[in-house]
Length: 90
Image 1: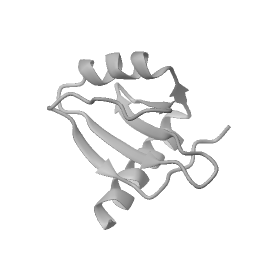
Image 2: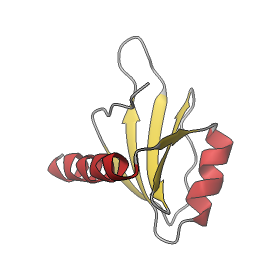
Image 3: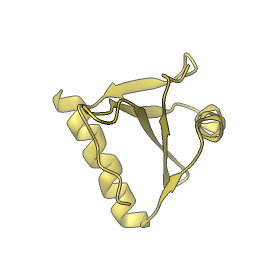
């Protein structure tokens, strides 16, 4: 659990430094993940009202985010960090 919080905090610091989170469709998100050499994806399940699956990955200094109604099939090279939740400014 502490590892997930640390990973989410690291991405949050990177986002503050770069100032951008790119929200995209799940298919486009998977394209970005496949471009990463050793991707670290932060994953969280939505809450009581929002049962979606949420994903966040960093690539070339930007953070990419997607939300999906179904769980994404991530490539085997992906390291996944399960977070209780994360917040994307809207």
